[in-house]
Length: 221
Length: 149
Image (cartoon, rainbow over all chains, first blue to last red; front, side, top):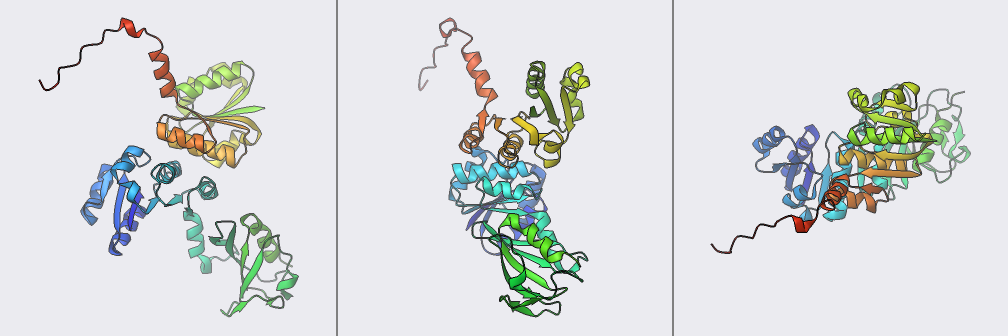
C-alpha cells in the first residue's frame, strides 16, 4: 500500500518506521526541513518538506495514488484541512486524523474524515487497569460511528450490585454485551447475568448515551 | 444577540469595529493579546467589544467568547486551516445560525463551501477590485517575444 503521512513528529516518524518495516510504501510531509532531514536519515528518501494541506504539495506527494492519508501533526486544524483535501480533491479512499483536542474527534468524523483518533482517549484506554477511580472508557466506534463500545467499571458499594442485566435501566439503543468479573471471568451478558461490585461491563451504546449508562452503573449506595 | 469573530488581525479587527459601531455586541478571539491593540479603545473599554485570548478553534475560547449565544461567527484569522476548523465547530457543534469563513487558498475555499460553510476569499476579492480599478486599454501591453529567437 502507498500511505502518506502528514506530520513528521514523534507519532508520524514512528508510524512511518513501522509501516516501512511492514513492507508498505510511505511518504511523510512536514513543513519543518529539519524534521524532514531526520526522517530521510532514518528511513531514506521518504519525506518531503511542504505544507501538507495544499493541493500542490499533495500532488507532488502523489496523493492520487495513495490508499490512505494519515494526518498526525500537532495542530488539529491542519489535520482536518489535509484530510479534507486528500479525500475530496485528491480522492484518497481512506483518511485518518489525530485529534489532539479530544472534542475535535467527533467533529472530524462529521466533516467526512474516515477515522478520528483522540490521543487522550487512547491513553485512557491504555491506563485501564491502573486508574483508581472508575472512568468511562471509550474503546472503539462501530457501525460507522453510530455506536461505540465502552468499558465501565462498577465500583465497590454500587447501587446496581446484585441486579441482573435485565434490571439495568438502559439508555435507548444501548446493549450490555459482556460482564467481566474482577477475577477475570468473562460472561456473555444474558438477561439473568448478575452485575456485582468491581465487575467491568462492556456495552455497545450510541455515543451520547455513554454517560447516562456510566452514571447508572457507577452510582453508589 | 452577539457576534463572535476569530482573529483580531487587520481584517478581524476592522470587522469587529464596524459591527460594534453599528450597535452589535462583539467578542473577538485571538491567540496574541497584542492583536487587540488594533481595536478602538473606547469599544473595548465600554464592553461593546469583549476580547478573549486563546486558540480560536478551542472550545474554551469559543465558549468564553459567548459562542452559545452567537448569531453570527466570522473566522478571520490569517490561517485558512484554523478558520476552517473554527467555522466547522461553530456550525456543527455550537449550531451558530450564520457562519462565514475567510480562506485564501482556492482549494480549501471550495472545500469549505462544499461542507456548507459560507466562504469568502479576501485575496480573490481584492484581485477583482484591483483589476476593476484600471482601464485595460490604458495599460500598454509589451509585444510578446518572437518564438524560437
